[in-house]
Figure 1 (cartoon, rainbow, N blue to C red):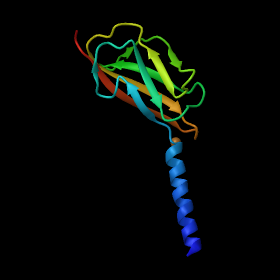
Figure 2 (figure 1 turned 135 degrees about the horizontal axis):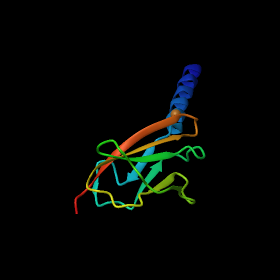
Figure 3 (figure 1 turned 30 degrees about the vertical axis):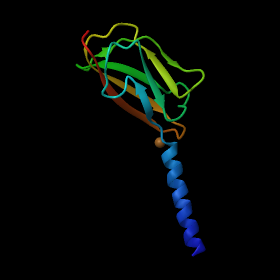
Length: 120
Ligand SMILES: [Cu+2]
């Protein structure tokens, strides 16, 4: 009985560890699905501090074309937080933010989220 309990507890701890080790996006500004005025920057908060220099973020318009942006900055105080400076007014329409990065478990993860810019 004690052995079985020990095995179960180990399995539980392992699955918790695997879940918490996985890398992803915690939130963003603009949020997924938001309709906003042209944002000066796009902010991403990840679930953990990514591997150094592993984050890339691209802004793509509704037609799939890459939108030229300014630089990406990692926040010095909160290293899970990254800001992409847009650097230009965005026309009204749909946009996707495509990101990739490497978490502390060494796995490369990529995903995207979308928002729209309202007509003024
Ligand atoms: Cu992982």
